Image (tube, rainbow, N blue to C red; front, side, top):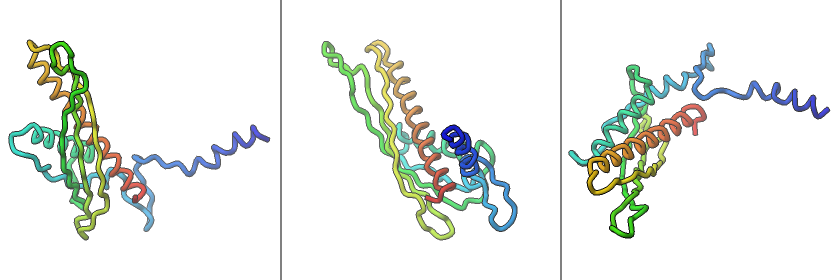
Length: 178
């Protein structure tokens, strides 16, 4: 009896599972657009940042990551939604060499507050925030360019995490409506 229940239960619940990124091709009035179609309809304007700063480079990087994540590299569709993002960054010393007083490892953080607005009605449908914290090494005093490159790599990694978090949250909204 237990074995039969174990074998039948997956068959009964198999129809309940629906992959998030699957295209729905149902016909008739109940047909809904697939997730990629909805993601393509999101307009991502430039992210405000002080001109010429490191944050400006991060804002461009994040916008490019979001555009690629939403459209997959294809051309966008007419915009139905607008995604507004605000960024703030932080750095924190994690490990300091007690002999020299120099920082050996730092944490780099990005905090992003974003909202998705329906363009036709002006109503905010998603209002959320996300963050990313990554660490990087600062090599010795003689290798300051390596330290700068470590910071840039940390910025890129943190930006990618933020873009993935925003994409996943919007995908969840478009599939579940919450």
